[in-house]
Every structure is written in structure tokens, then in C-alpha cells.
Length: 293
Image 1 (tube, rainbow, N blue to C red):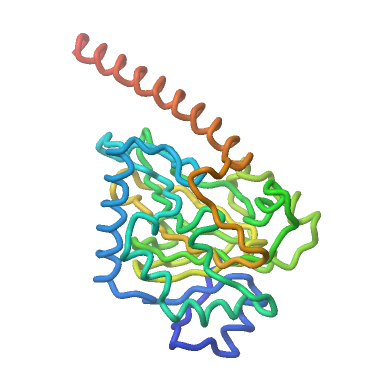
Image 2: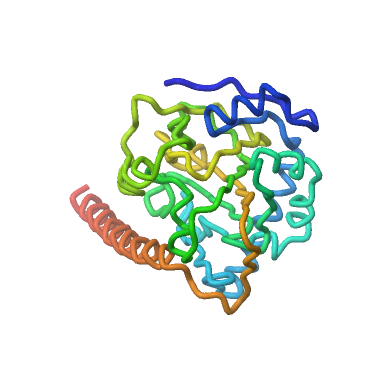
């Protein structure tokens, strides 16, 4: 599988980095934060999850949370939205001056960090376990969400801070480099959104270490490959920071749930029911095995 050599961000974007991003629609920066900082962020995320679970919060500012179970059967939130609203440390991180420099990748458009817009600071928690609701993610782009919100597609970047090591052989991010320059036909019909999980001969993978930063154009086709291992070693946690353009549209507790999230919620309920049936089937077989033992 093809992969790209990562860059290092030295407090400014070089001409080489700009050209690379313009050509491929994605770029990786090594060691954007130190391992000690990653550990702090993971503790903060755990604290936020504890607050949300203890208060039985199912959605934040109209955005549903995605629930699942880890390899030990404990409930976890596999997709957090507006995470920085519950953590001063994470909110302060979004003010890191380096992000203002990276916003230049949106040029010639004026960009901003959408802490209070879209889904805010999102944390995705992938783990390959029998009852996880987030093992992989099918091919998609991020752009059509604007259409569901009643506006035209706006330039945006998804900036991911990776919180776990994820070598390419352990699954993780896959992209079709250069597809951010495609026309509308390619944007909408190159793949079946979220349904198609198949590997593409042209896809690019990444060797990720905790603390790395990836930035991809919202029009770029990408997916998340399921880890071939099961349990804790499959864990992949990423904080996604939205770099957005267009009119300022903050959300609050009264904001409606976007239609595409409602569709995703129906799928999650169906998958949860299927997992429950699988669990009952497995327990039944285990009991029979003991009886026949």
C-alpha cells in the first residue's frame, strides 16, 4: 500500500508543505504534541465521558453521542461532540497559535476553528470488540453535510490529533489522495457513502504515532480500516478539530439534530440490536458447551 512521508511543523508552513497539501488534499505532521500532552488529553476525555455518562446525556447541542462497549464490556462513548465544552484544557488547546498558522491551508478563504459550530471538537474512539459500535467507517467525504444543513458546500478542513499509535498494518485512516479536486459527480458518486468499506487499489495509508496531526480537505474521499486485532491493541482515538469557512453558525442546547445524524442513529440502533442478538447466541452456545462438556 502506498504511503506518504510525514512532515514536521516548525511554526510555519513551508512552500513544500503547501504544495503537497494542494496536490494530495492531506498532510501529516509528526509529533505535533508530546506524549505527555497526549496523556493529559486522554485523561480529560475520560473525565468528559464520565460526566456525560453519569448525567445520562445522549446529545450535545443537538448532536447525538455514539455509544458502544469496550473489550471488557464497559460502556463507552465512541463519538463525542463539542468535547471542549466540558474541558477547559481541551478548550485552551484549540487556542494554540499554531492552528492559526495552519488555517492558511484554507486560503484564499478566511477560516476559523469551529469550536461552537458543526459538531465542535469531536473525539472518535475506535475499538475492535464484539459489541463495539465503532470498528470502522466506510468511504465518505465530509462536504455533503452542508447540503443537509440547507447551505452550499463550504471549504473546510478536518484536523485530527491522534492519541494512539496506529501503524498502517493495524488499520486506521485510508484516503484517495487528490480526490479533493474532483467535480460534483465524483464528490457524490465515486463511492457509496458509508456503505462501501472495500479497500481501493489507489488508497493511501499512514503510519501514525500518538501526538501526530493529520489535516485533510473536506472534499477528500477517506475511510477508516478496521483493525485486524481485537481488544485494547485495536484502540484508535482521534480528536477532530474543524477548520471551517462561511457564515458563523454557533449551536446551543436548543439546536435541532441534523437529518444525517438521525439516519446514523437509526443505523446505530439496528447495529446494537444485532450485537445483542449475537451476544445472546454466543452465551447460549457457551452454556450448551458446558452442559455437553
